[in-house]
Image (cartoon, rainbow, N blue to C red; front, side):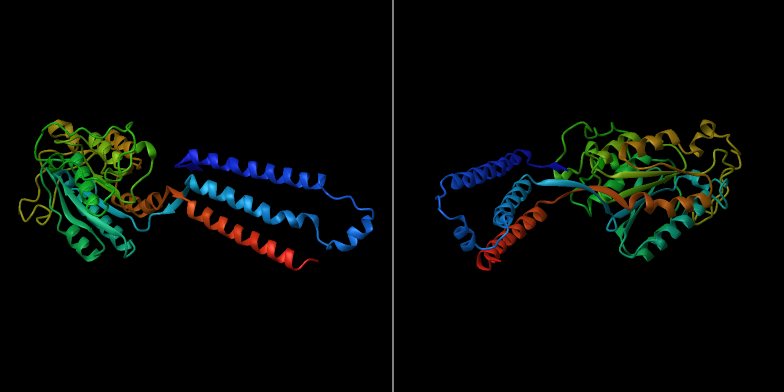
Length: 374
């Protein structure tokens, strides 16, 4: 348990002070008692009442004062709370490497199938947004509960050149900022991913907790209920780096769950005409079988070290999915990783209410035992 105003705990010193005064007063009354010649007469005139009962009302008042002192210090307890009202931003890689056929029929088709299944299994009240990224990142669908709209957007994904993972994270943050006022949007220029200008300076994780408008500092490990699920099969090729973008997300308390998709031995790249945006030139990877190609085929493999660092920076978890079934399992298991989170809850109201009950009990006890002696 922690306290927002710990100095007010000094008010609890009033309780032992009052107790000491009460005990002193009782002893003083006994010393000043009148001496009677016959104790039998005193016992006959005194009501038959247990000695401890006359102390109960005062004890209840002391307990009520102690509760009020604790309530004034604003105590907070850390509890596990469900995030049933959370939103999920799906940041999906639609770069040309998603046409690799190491995952049948190709990576993009397998990803579309898995994402569709994920959307269909979510509760009707869960808001989901879609960010598609290749050479730039764009918000395809703002967070919504309209699952039909989301399915249409996933079915209409088309590929492009380049992979801007960092820009996708920032664009996802912008989408979250639209529905959560406690999450500040990312820098618009950096999130566009259209230039290679210097990256914006992320918030310092060691700085004090920012104002509510800028989210939670990562050091507090207090997370926003919204999360980003980042699916990619390659490495960042331009714009802000994924790690720099992850620091921006961490400063806002937003967790990123990266998924590295595809095998380490991709074959040729073949996409359908629809996935190529209507282009009939579907097979464009004949010249680069296996791991050969520009850069040794590195652009066809997920950058796992970077993705792991993104997850560690934001408080998320990295997943690896080599094939279609593994990707479906990862997405199906994802709610288990984000459903419960730790939150601080203030219990001042509960303590104040308990103090009121104790006062009422004290009054009731005083009235009951003074009016109806046994």
